[in-house]
Image (tube, rainbow, N blue to C red):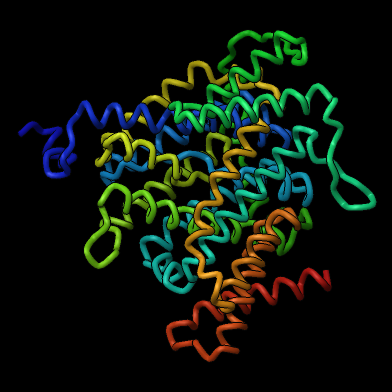
Length: 441
């Protein structure tokens, strides 16, 4: 038995180096779209696109390699969809907080994540919140990013009479986005590996050929790639300096922390089940190591210049290809690091090409809804409120708040509460206090 075999337990898990490498490549191809989509979203917060692309590659690469070495799981990490939208559209655009301060909050959330992991608090929170709310949060974020994609493509626009309405489908941007939606949809139906990334590139090529995209090439510049590195403003994130953001900073930190937690738990359960790596009692072995890799990647990402890093459900594609160990994740991470060489070219991709990816990724995030007991009002009502308020209020925080408060109230009404639910009611009380603060601020 080779040293590599012993370290990753290849034989024990019924796999081989060749299988793990192929699985790692498969995972990379299915999630490589994030190298293009993440800069497109964070660029709308005023962040340099090429630098965000480089930070995305670096954070994903470090996270995947850490996951492989520390936890030995075939789970890949990258900046999370949904949290990047919250960062750009809610925190920066709506709340007016500078992106440097927002990066500081991402850094702090990563540090808190590490502390809570060591202290075992994250496991308590996971126990307190029902899995149904995890599923509703994931799906609500899916609707959120799909809505952003539809809006960015001009397919959905503001309408004073009905709030939103159908956009001008004769507009070249909308037409190009619809073409991209069709291309990516067909590729996904045909199960083409890397279908989302291929669709983005093909749509961009059509846009260039029809002169719908205008881009002036710039020299490959290391300075351009590092424009977001170490630009985070930690003092401002801590409220030092009297910039008047007050409790808003605490709320943002809370969202970064909890959405990351819920997102990871849902993904970990799904991928480890598919890989047959769940223990007999239903627990996930070495969970703390998995969470450690995630939190560390978030800290690295904030220093490099990107939003919160999470586990990716696309890891399941590598598991389907036979990946069973951390070697799969390491191969994925190395490919992300290699992509750093072409990161500045992310800015040549038009919004009309990334919008279809947002829409279809959002669609694929609807799968967890099947896990919700819709015939049980105590579960169904909070899940629905979470699902619907995230996209309609353009805020993940509001979805979390409505879901947790509704669940606590209905559990009390149904007399289904136990002593172990104290943390759930404490969280609900915090959210109620948040609503009171928002009403009086």
